[in-house]
Image (cartoon, rainbow, N blue to C red; front, side, top):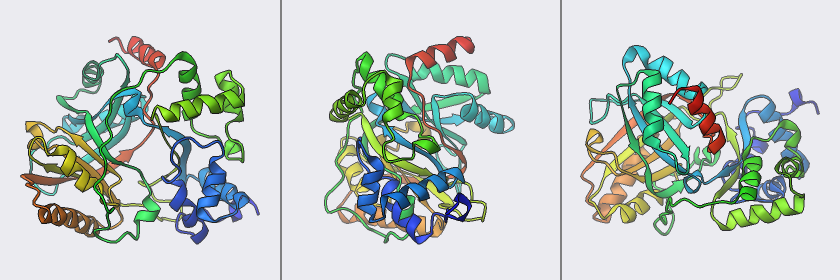
Length: 369
């Protein structure tokens, strides 16, 4: 079957069966990740490879890659930018195209005037260990003409996944039996060999690398044998710096036939009493609909919110039903939520954030910081 004849839409039954696993259920480092996807999805390996190749080739899948827990490897933060309206588009373009350390770049709006609604541009930012988020932010502020930026580093992580396909039909209120466990963001030091393997591992797979043994060329790139590559990868796994092997869908733009994976994304904020963040963040993060859930300090500009999370969907009202269910759960356990709001995502571009110290130094040398 030629690539053109292979079904490529995310809602094709076999593709959906594959994507339900491949988006965010292949945890850690796997020596044979596509075998794992085949086993967990119940789809033959040859079909898994054929379908993922076809979806990647046609842009339905944006990238296939091994993710890292970059919070363990670099300093990171969610950043809200106040940018003059006439510079918003150019600032967006620069963050997306010219700054490798900005990952998610999103415009956000609110349904009414609330704390922080004048901050229309939101990004994720990472800088290598030992470098300054504030310094990098100030350089970006100068380059794009922003008026102000607010850094919101994660103090704890309760949920981090994607799984848009399996969340499409998720029931309102679906949650785990226990609260989510908070993961910390303490950084981990790596040696030179570990960095070489890690940097080779994290790059996007090419079409040719969507194959039964995708790591052969990466081991060569890292300058080690395949056996040693796997040994180091297992050591990195043990250090909790490896995320998941994932196929990332194009979930913002429609496919060539007009189909969308998602249409809306809501960034939810809650303000809970100080000292309650780990407990109540776990209560929010236990809800399966949350793709991301963090303890972040919004500060006075955002009403001093401290629990933040994201929900995606194709129906705005249904997203709000999910939020209402989370709010009802918090009320049912006597959680003293003092304030809550929603920021809606608009234009959005996503790329992996760079964390290489060498690239960071080159970028700052070029931009005169």
